[in-house]
Length: 575
Ligand code: ADP
Ligand code: SF4
Image (cartoon, rainbow, N blue to C red):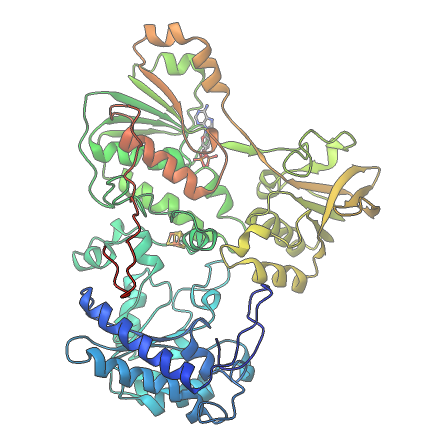
């Protein structure tokens, strides 16, 4: 159902049917019944929601979706009718005992075609100014609201919502990936908001308000705006957060975001590698009270996070390292050694009880990933580069082809960086879209738009077949028909090889390892299986929390056992 008979927004072969008056009456009564149930369930605030392009009230407000000619369509007043009725219904139903806030999209960031803060967004609030108990104002759609840090700054919604407090006396709350207490205070002092909304920042750190209150600003795990949390929603998988590895595991595994159980024994633990996995592991082990040695081969900590935060738009990635460095500085039981590349002999001499290898991974040069499962045969190795080469500033000659068979952010970022250096760049991908997987982090349309605006040529649905002699041969993934493009260099953004040599050397001499008293050697993070930064942090935390737990055959986490109630003709379910 919808305000008008229209195709739905996704590509499913489905159309909405236009609601008649009875549908609207039914919808209002369902909404009212839902409010009653919510109160029964114990909620204190029961929202009426007209935002994110998601709900009927928002679709009725919208000129694009609402082409009705009755009292619910046409003028803005008519289009606002359903929202007004729902607010009144909800207040009628639960207003005595619950607050009834309204979440409203004040701008869809598409100019006059959508709701626009300067026109209809403002007029809607003026019309309903004193009706809700609280105005929760935002921009739509969700990708504009939960803007990835690569494309928008903290407090990015300020310019759209700043008028709201001038037209209502009701309190106003808003969001904007607020992680810095200063930015929050500024919103209140400038009279833009009365309350700070924080969804992603409180996923990254559920104790954000408490830490501000106690003046523990260094302890805040700041959201990096990567939208990995959103990706879990999009892919219907358990939620993960790059900064907060306990997210979604509070009940399942009993992981409290701030409290970690004390150590179980006196094991001394060596962590090799100070990327996100090794840093998180060392911090969490340190907080448990274990004696930890963290050995990092290079001159700086942070591993891939430090490297990648130098790429265009990714500076916020550095927060993954910074938070953990701050925590390490408070842990006297964790010793950190830089420029300490460990060999198997070094590990055996380290006088520790357990060894954790967080030695990372590096990008392949041979094209192997999804399109090629075996190394490419015709490849001019001398002119093939990896993302690490690009970050290190190696000289790359144009025209350059970025072959992206990784499909997350790296291919797009590398193409952007090379183009900004003035090179002629073509990004070639076997997927239909550039950085295909970033549809899940809501970055994809912006990535593709940015590349096109910068003048990067995009060749989708193509694989790189050969490269040499100043040209690249490319094949259509459907027809296999080949084309050639001039290319002086190729950057392979394909897949990564885990650095697990140390692991294999140590496990190959298991007897020797045992002789020196080492009880276990484990890999974590990218060295175990290359993945997202979130996966590396999770892996490090997982080891630190659970390595000393008894291992049995039981499932390692609690499961909800869902049970269907029985249905009776009276419409009452028995459970
Ligand atoms: P992850 O994402 O799993 O944390 P990274 O690649 O970000 O992996 O980090 C791995 C870190 O391990 C890098 O900083 C690298 O310098 C370091 N490293 C790799 N091999 C060794 C080694 N043998 N000894 C010490 N440090 C190492
Ligand atoms: Fe922030 Fe990324 Fe965590 Fe989401 S996953 S809360 S965007 S750090």
